[in-house]
Length: 288
Image (cartoon, rainbow, N blue to C red; front, side, top):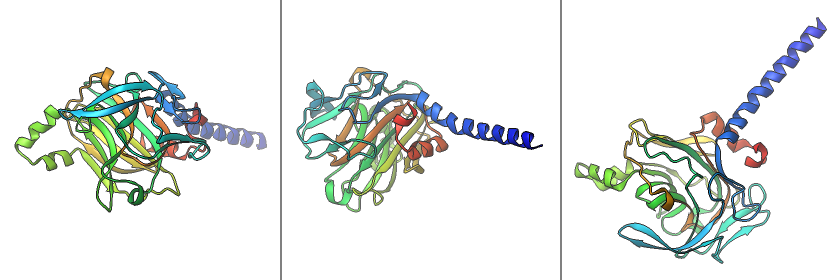
């Protein structure tokens, strides 16, 4: 009887451990890009180009134009801060200017022009009310600009600031809706907004963007903060067409603060997986 009870207990424990390990392996297997900033600016893991790039940005016909692109971080106001990250080092954005830093989207994002799904995760340490000025995009992924085939999060420009997720399809498509509604109403349908009061320099805040079926009527994009769903954008069927070779993962646009643990996945993470990612004791490194 005792032996049988021990056997049952061991079996139950094994089953529990198996259940606990499965979500981690699924998260790991979905990873397409990961930058911890612990070993410099190059990504720790990348299916595409692992290099960070710096360029001078200007704007023409509402599109971002990059000039003098160089490999590496070539902005003296940006730097790696040792030991100040959530885990290890952190990337610090300080004074803002016309230079931008980015990773290339090709292969680092599982892009599909007809039906696109994935997730983007990172941590921020920032005091919005004291450090930010104007609209600020900690991350913006696009081949043109924020309002044309772009996924981003931003802090708004007026106090008290809001924190927003924007999922904006092709400009030529969504502007057709402005024939029957105001530009603000049409644009706001593609944005999920929450108050930014939970952000602080004295703590780290986890941000996750999950998106599914972009470019179809079933599209759904959700914003998670510290493991909890904070808002969503759904039912927007605008196409999402990139010139993939020109698409980039821009970081810290007009942003001042710290970033850590940037990771990208080829599928939308479930609520349970988002919480698990948030609770990882040593970050993505612990499941690689």
